[in-house]
Length: 166
Image (cartoon, rainbow, N blue to C red):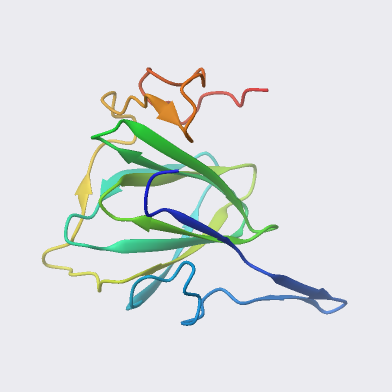
């Protein structure tokens, strides 16, 4: 895992009425390392890729998939390491992504993915802290994926649509 990325399982309390999940608490010192200033909701249709972008002025993102599923990726240009995380609404987790990594996600499955994400910087409409690359940028070539160098996707341009391997 790239340094600074943290994954926290979220507890789901289920009963006959439905379920309840705490999605943000100030006292979660194991993952919350920043003051949260903004919350956002994103709905993404199946097989849509929202990538790549990064934040150079210190923005940190905290992602939670609350419905559907996504493949969330972060890439470090310097080390050519890629971290890939699958998030689902059925088994909720919060993921902290330091903004200096290129990051993005793909909605998986047959239903829209609903994402809530928190950030430690307010969005500046006139001067956004965001640099973008195309979702299919051929210069994103991971040497390792989740610490593994023998993944068949290594040393090739990143392909969001690579078939799941067994």
